[in-house]
Amino acid sequence: MGKIEEIREKRFQYLHLLWEKTDGNIRAREDMDALGELLGYSKQEIEKVVQYLVDEYLVKYAGLSKLIEITHEGVKEIEEALSHPEEPTHYFPPVNIINVHHMEGSQIQQGTVSSSQSGTFITENKKDFDEFLNVLKDKLSDLNLGDDDKDEIDSDIATLEAQLNSSRPKSSILKESLLSIQRILEGAGGALVAQQLLPYIPPLLMLFK
Image (cartoon, rainbow, N blue to C red; front, side, top):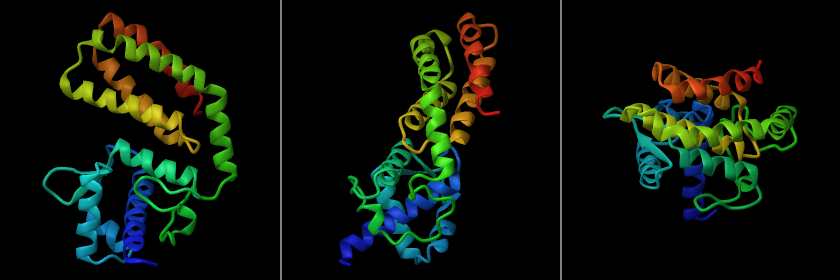
């Protein structure tokens, strides 16, 4: 293996492990050094890999500590790589030629029972999610949310859309994003638009029971 291929492989392994540890949650944080140590990387390798992923906005630093978060773009990149393991992505070589270490519940193998169930679940109910998201995005500006809530709900919408369009969607991420949106809408108090949007959510959450 050439030097460049080895470097790209290490970047994938690191981002894939971060994706696994956070369950694809863009607000979950992990210690950058601890992740690298699980992969057997040196301190120098960790710094180089993380800095590259940050520069490409696949990962971002969380404050001044060594905590990091996967970004929406990072989730999309990993899910694209795992969905088509025989094809390279913009950042990584084909997954099926990568010696991926420390896999936990990996989704590289296709046709597993859990993946099949998840795929069927989305196929059967995607239109319900799409309807809710279309209404939510249409009414979003009328909610008069604060900057933090607006950023969070935008992130939740992006996460839901990425999961719904993924060939390996994760029910846990869909549910968490719905609950986050529900909390924000409930926090909007008696706003008429929020009260119009809230009834969409319980039937969607019931799908996860």
